[in-house]
Length: 88
Image 1: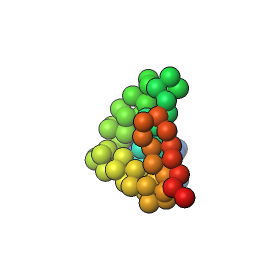
Image 2: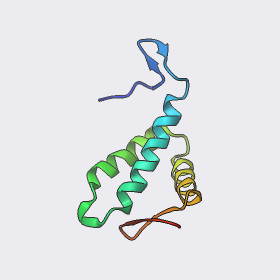
Image 3: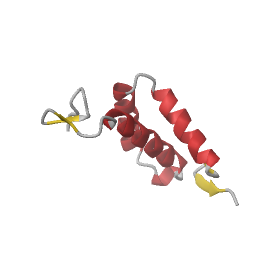
C-alpha cells in the first residue's frame, strides 16, 4: 500500500491534521518494541520496512525514535537486550 504524500488526506478531506505525526510516532514505538524482542522473535524485515517508512515520512526520523524511547523511559519502561523491563 502506498501512502499519499499527505497522509492526512483521504479523498481530499483532512482527517486529523496530525496523520503524518501520529504515523511517525507509531513507527518509532513499533521499531523500538521489535528491537527489544529476543532475536529469535524479531520480525527483522518488518522492522527494516518500518525504518524505511519512518525515514520517508519524517524530516527527522531520529527525533521520533529518541522521543519514543525517552517517553517509554519516563514511564518506567526500558527496552534492551531482548527484554522489556518495567521499573517498580
